[in-house]
Image (tube, rainbow, N blue to C red; front, side, top):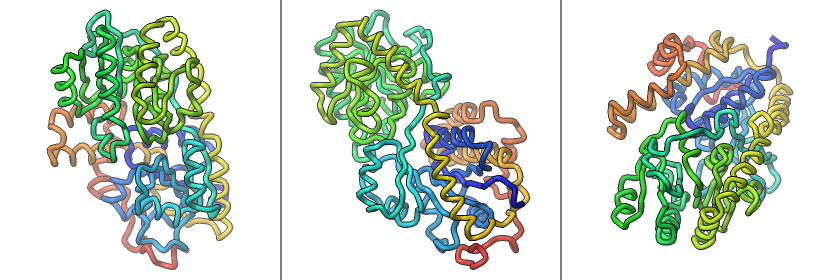
Length: 427
């Protein structure tokens, strides 16, 4: 057992969407060196026995969101493998943020700005490593799109935003009020403007825009596989956020050669050179955002050039390249863990991390959608459609294993092997 690869537990908040994708990219990048066990928070909340069984056999833990640190509140800190926590952004400092810096051996962030912020918080007690956000340029690339696919009338200058309306409920961090202000002012100046609101929850805003005479459409929930086409249908992608970690949508829009106008949040100050590969403005600066949009409408050749330059910029931010700093973080955590002796062998099902990944992703999809349908936040038909997308290319066998994981009927460990959180056996 001394020659086995080090084991790392990755805990995203969800297997699906941004942070889950980040976890899968980490596995693709470093899977040859480390064995990764990918378990979303929701599954661990349903199956705390999995965590108790795995902890003694793990070399390091990477919480891909600060919320995951709550799963370890009942564990003796001395009994745990070293933990790294990824803090993407801070809208308001929370108990989870504080617990993360109190109980982690390392922190990871996406930008230099967030590193500086957290360095002040931790005062040098633990290292903070910048691991920039990446983008899959093979998936996000320009597509040929018929505009009517997204309700866009012919011959329009198209301005768009992509994101769930609910994402702005976090103290208004997405700046929806600024977004709508800029849209209305742009419509007053550009009679040929059309606005696309991509994502669920925009029905009220769409109706209000139309009443005020703004040509607009909304997509509702949009499948991931349709995102490149939607970005490609836009002339300008507008982001008005006040706080961001990435922001992912800016990377994706640039990768699709869509000109970006954004507030200076997250990686934007490091990414965008004004007038070269996009435009940026201070948070809440509606007038500067509007001026950039008007300039991009006035000079279409310049807009196309900016789009091409944007893709060239983000092409240097492939996941394989940007994740490189994580290797050193993991090496240090594992060295610290193994200085105290090798982890235990663990349950038999830990011998196949890839099968475990497939089952846990299926389990998270099933549990998440079923819960939303039961709470009536998602219709049955919507749930079926979402499951089809989430389980696309997933085998029947893996779906069955995922369903069994949710019910506690698979990946079980004899009760005698379960290690209580405060047991000295985990030390």
